[in-house]
Amino acid sequence: GKILRIEGLDTAQSEDLIDELTELMIQPGAEYRHRWRVGDVVIWDNRCSYHRAAGDYPPEQDRIHWRVSIKG
Image 1: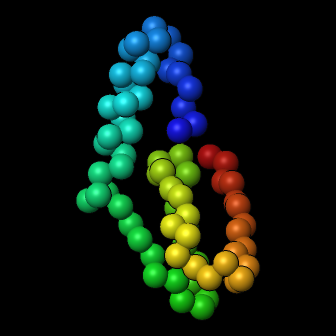
Image 2: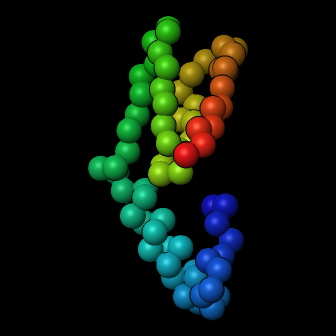
């Protein structure tokens, strides 16, 4: 993971909380999978989601990613 530590907690507390939160966010029932079709656009809120590419697309096809940040 990318979370190194939670500021304000000692190492053991930080690791315990990170483990607990990780278990909550990777529950199978909380997962969304998208079957891509030409023209699809998928939008998610990076502040509130955990995501990764499934690698279920042909490697010879380009994947185009545009990132938009909205302030406020």
